[in-house]
Length: 331
Image 1 (cartoon, helix red, strand yellow):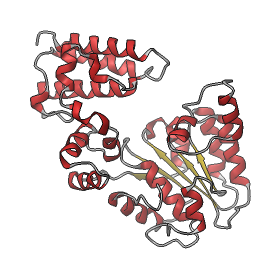
Image 2 (tube, rainbow, N blue to C red):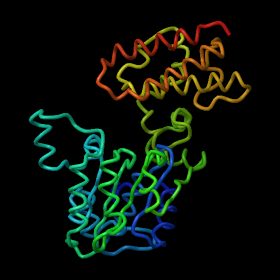
Image 3 (cartoon, rainbow, N blue to C red):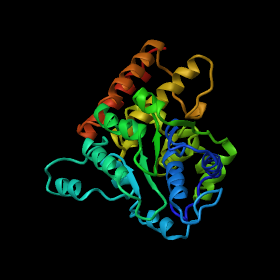
Image 4 (cartoon, rainbow, N blue to C red):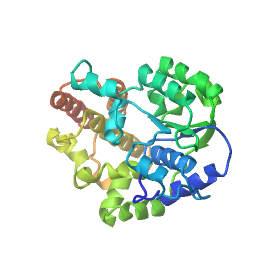
């Protein structure tokens, strides 16, 4: 999030509300795709800005520029190494060295070593004199040891330091972490606002409609569906035929997510409800209650291990075979 990429309107409104309140630690919570990271970074920018306004950071001072280039001395971004890389933040010299030398793989959890560096950061004097900020995202990626290392600093912060934790699964956080933060539930934008924002990102209206539906109404997640938006409506019947090619270049997590949504919509239709993620006319006929509920349970079990280093092609073949069997069972 830089000065050239303004916040979505519903996030800007939330930022203004939060900036008007006091508190040294905020917990931004809600489902994925509602902009937790963007809002957290906007708060950090405003807190550190040399010329802040009630609406947020000025966008052109030295502090704002330092955050834009991911090199602010008073901002500590605490994330899994995989998220740091995805979002363009630098790894620590030690972590980069260990990964480059293949001593270990990039971590998908917030490591205790990174948390210790964060605690040390919180105890230092502000370099620019505007205080310090610790941004944690996604906060649910802290294990119990990492969370406990943060807890004492949250309780008794040294000096002028603020914390903003952003999470897509608040229930996974330690209750003691949640209780030491002011909570903010992310606001879900309405359909029109989400559509307008997607179109402002260069997405054609027809494509935006499909993407937003595929993402369950979550705008940030909808953008991730851009590469496959043309395939989305074809996916249900392709899966029923056992066509694995529809998931070409997809990650295992994306594949399981799509199949979960298909299974959800088929079960919804069986109860007389409207499908959420697919158009009713795109859904295949068939599938018994027993086969669909068993499939849903199997997908939930798979999600727990989806990040393990399996062979992607073989895993997708197995998932599609499982789906095909469920979809072609007699109602």
